[in-house]
Image (cartoon, rainbow, N blue to C red; front, side):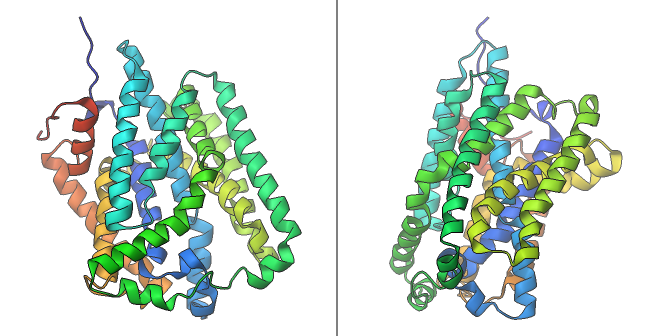
Length: 391
């Protein structure tokens, strides 16, 4: 009998992985809110504007707990998911690479639309491109995944940190200065002209992501490979069978998370250490979060507490795009025009409200439908046929 590729069914899902994906969507929104609402996170200069104690504490908490932690977590989960899909297809004796390539190319298309029509801070293009690179590692040995992850991330971060240390005096003097005048940017996003907003949006994408695409293999591919490694080992498939190991990894990841993310604050949080703080600290904070959620998800109370995150995670694609649309309507001149007018703490409050609404919406939607709207579209395009939507 010929086997056909098909999406994962609800009974096959690892619900703590869905919850982790939902939690990542929340963390990503917290960090993205700084860019949705102002130019400072993209072009620097935030210390010149957000300089009262309330702002400084809020920015420090975001930096330690959220910054670089949740795109790292999502990268880990993306790599984990690629390996999971590969394993399922191989069980059916189907070739994984053609299907996954098609899936990633459609994600790239969605990313281009999102980046240039909705919001420049898109991450879908990045995940699609890095995902295509990750396909080259589907057949390598487990230890090869770790060798490449450590080599790419450690080598690149070590080199950049060394160069930054040599230039630490210059970085300390000029690192907080705005990279370009922000007043015209604020005026453009407060405009009610779509063409003005889209033009500024394209400029910001080129500034923030254009050159950054070169660094993707060194910064994000290692996170994909670590996720693939965990999927190969199946530690998160059967957590209770590996509980002792997972607890040890949890302790180690917590220690390294605190060393790299919190530790720099005891030494003035030097800018020259930023790449190591975000990349190495982001990796270990991501591991800490995924291990915490996995272990918590094995308890009855934990499973109940995580259920709302599970709903959001199962609709992560839809909710991610929805966050962008809602924030554009809140902050740009085509909507309420709050751009450049909210503090970091107010941004956190807005993010919590949006995410709370997404929890409610996602739970209601998934009572009636198998997939979120964009998940359904993506799956239908990937598998080349309309997927069953209703339950």
